[in-house]
Image (cartoon, rainbow, N blue to C red):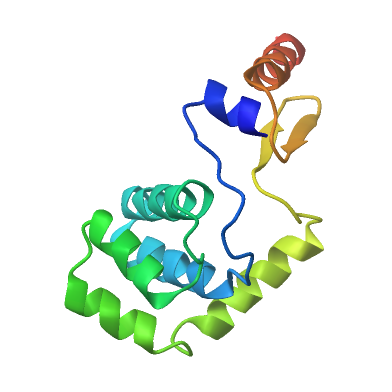
Length: 142
């Protein structure tokens, strides 16, 4: 994984805390719904960097707050939402269950929808795997 990360500019560390990420998902889901996909993308990028490179706890309030600040979310708004761990929790659990019923159990989970069939890629893949899938979808769609 270190070699793969290096090729992508990621300096993976392996001594951080492995923990439940439900609270991180709750925060991402809330701010995606209220602030949009671009803010959610910034949140995810910050959380990934903090977890994989800086060995921060993935759902600790200070990690979540730092991610929110990096994403441009007002600090007081972020603090209030992070502190109330019940806010948005049931909605997030419903969305997780929905994806579990769709057999999604890893990230990334990408479905390329084709004219004749869909191609699904799960987990870490090489760029060439994505290119191959896209080329196959294009070929079958003509």
